[in-house]
Length: 108
Image 1 (cartoon, rainbow, N blue to C red):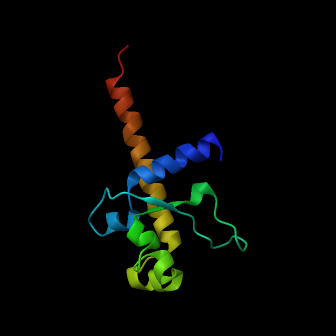
Image 2 (image 1 turned 90 degrees about the vertical axis):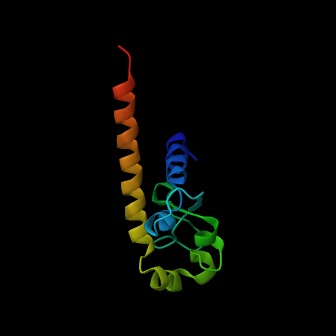
Image 3 (image 1 turned 30 degrees about the vertical axis):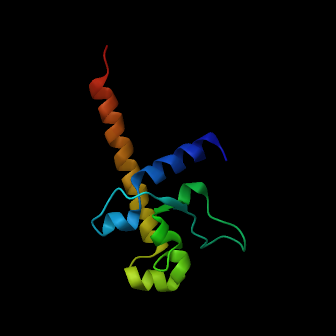
């Protein structure tokens, strides 16, 4: 794993579970989920395509691995691509806020 990949995964995990966020309970601890769509057997997606999910939404009985991708998508009415899109927006928003904060608190 490269330094950039590790930094990105830390940012993704810091968001908390993206599905909990959508359900109105942001900030839950997150594990990193790598979607497999478009990858070969036994391969995972790029670290830059990772999605933060809490243990229940990741590995639990109502999670993507517990239910399977199709059932998960039907149950929550959002697919991995949608979760990834929201994740990217949240990471970008958090980056924007932290850059603005650093600039506003810098001492010249």
